[in-house]
Image (cartoon, rainbow over all chains, first blue to last red):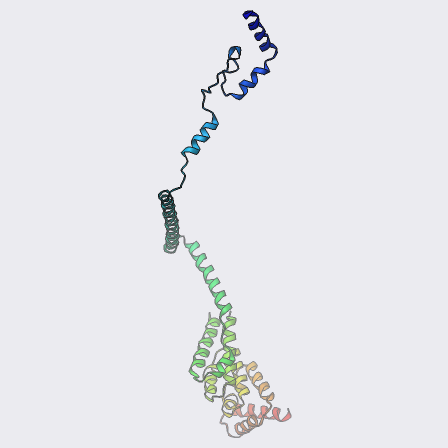
Length: 172
Length: 123
């Protein structure tokens, strides 16, 4: 009789397997599917993910007391000093860059162009630009200014200089 | 090639001296302008001296040999004559011309003054 019961239970397992799979689904035990005769392990021997999260939560610091709160504030002020140090580093970096630029400028100024044609071309171009700017912004001598001058030695000198310049340009 | 800025400066200084009230300005124009080697400068100076219409300035361009109406350059002489003829008040210029015709030692200067005086009477 006992054998018949066991055969019927086997037959039930063969023809109605989903009945047992439900039990398996509730557990994370991978051996549960293969457990014979429906003897499923009730105790989960594997550590589930839920348990891990719980453990993490348990390990998390909870600032409840004044001491812990002050520790938190202290850590924040430490962060401030770290930020301050970071800013100082940036300032130092900027200063270094600036120094490099200034050095480069000084070096350019002190650099002498030894290639004569290039030197002449640059100096000529500079002279032309300088003359153009000078003539553009120079107000020149106006007749009204001369007429208002009380001391005639100034217009005398100006006239002499310009007449001489005119005569010199014709002579050359 | 003369720099345009120099030409402009010379013109402005001479024009300024022409407007200047100080009689010393005539000496500046005579010393520097009328003795210049450049015809254009002498021409501008002669015009300025006539425009001043002062006895001292008119004497410079009428009675001096080689200046104003007696300049060796025809252009300078003609410009000076034209400027004298253009004067609104010719009284002083005619008086100096008459004096030059009567009293100047140089014949050429006297002849020139006589011709200009005749032109001014006609104008």
